Image (cartoon, rainbow, N blue to C red):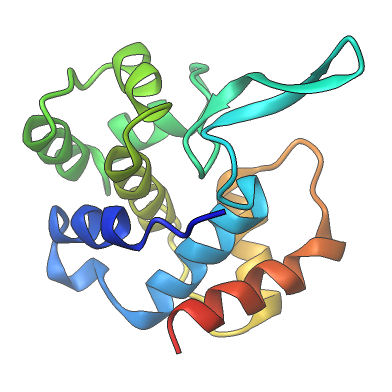
Length: 163
């Protein structure tokens, strides 16, 4: 596992400075760790008893491509749409669900930028505690199988990265 700090830094540089803060980076890092442990850019599913990167989610932040999923939300939400368009333009990716999803499996900058933008769609202030971070993660990522028992480790990992 290698924490993609350079990609995250580049992603944040593509966004308005107001979206960048230590608090935003901590939560961003915690969510990435919770979703993938920064080990696979595609969701792992069991195939013949073996985990394989063939699931429907892409990037370390595990974005799905459905009409009601995160990529579409970032591309269409009033708070994030214009920023997503600028990110897509800067990275030369078509601002459409499938194009973004396909590119995310290999482009950590795109995944990191969309993760921050998805957080930005939440109307609440950025959380300042492990519990509030968990609440935002559940509201915004809507994990199908939430694992609160691993969130403390994910949040601690993120604090280590940005302390």
